[in-house]
Image (cartoon, rainbow, N blue to C red; front, side):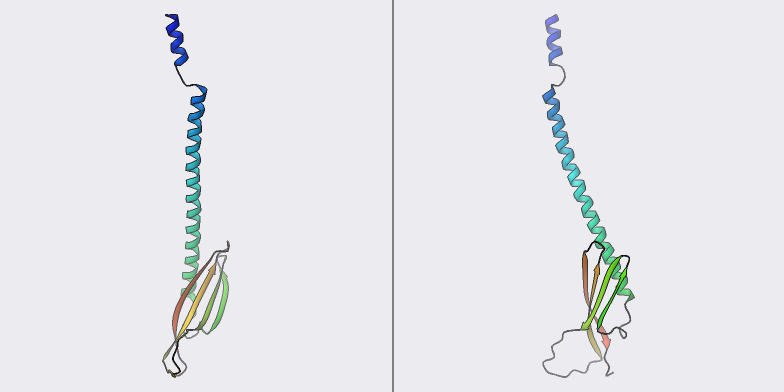
Length: 134
């Protein structure tokens, strides 16, 4: 009877190697979960920075001067720690040597917004401006 109790005691529980294997499996699982969380956090920060640049660009586009006051050239400034630049230039139109007398002249607008981290966003659009020969 003593022999049977000693045999049960020696087989009950985990050995040191089994415990180390279990701990290493848990550590690998935790490391992979931590990596996924870090990647998710970086992605969330990237999306947030992109949305901040987009909101600054929207605010700038709505605050631009009226179409009659917007002349070819550039405007620069800074808003909410974001540097911005608006380039206004004539729209590239090929008229094949014909003289066109239009009431409206297209202008190309390129808005560049740069965040404090250095990431930039460019938005290009066309605005119509009344010509001088109305």
